Image (cartoon, rainbow, N blue to C red):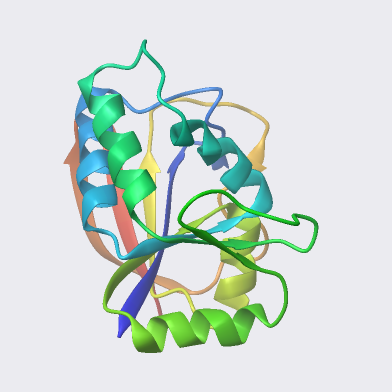
Length: 176
């Protein structure tokens, strides 16, 4: 049975924003390894459109960025959207009956499936489908943006904390 994991970079004041701060080299390498090991990813439309950046090679990329792009392209992706009509390579569009599709993926697959996007994660958490939350906490304050938790925070229990790289702390929680 697969485990559904929601993890993102977060500011000290609870916001996620890929344009405001990015992982340092060690944390980026961690994300490359994580992408290599994942069974797949489930995205909401907005984050999937951001991640499509990795579909096309960029000559300015360094080795770590090329490694991440290769790992991201290789894994299957399921995109939850009612507005998209098509998705890119190695991706499946999920428009209806999201709960049944995700429950089916969890039952049929093994390993970790990454959930991308706070709103999608909130919907899946409300259905009891998120098995683990990983907050990559950075020492920055944004004062605005999209919160990591898109709604009421579910009851959680801390199961691990790790310093990763240049000051990011990974906090791992499971639902209680």
